[in-house]
Length: 106
Image (tube, rainbow, N blue to C red; front, side, top):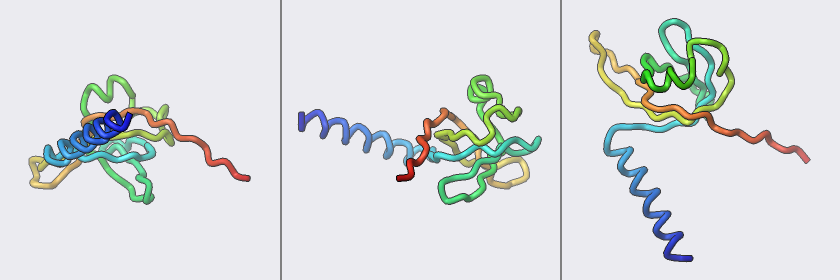
């Protein structure tokens, strides 16, 4: 059992290291909507994140240009790249709905 846990821990560590080395970043954030320019999200620190582009596979799975997913949480992987104006933009590569449990007050 200890070997299985160790192996699992090593696999997770390797996966995270691979993401970091490839320039891919990951965030869990709440979708705020699309304004014809950016896909807006709030991260856990309530910082607003604007993604200028979104992979077609993500948009075919989740129609982020409608209000259907507003206030839903997503696990997002994204990259940065320079656009034609020389500005750095963020590009959503993958997105999956995140199950968020309501806090229980006692």
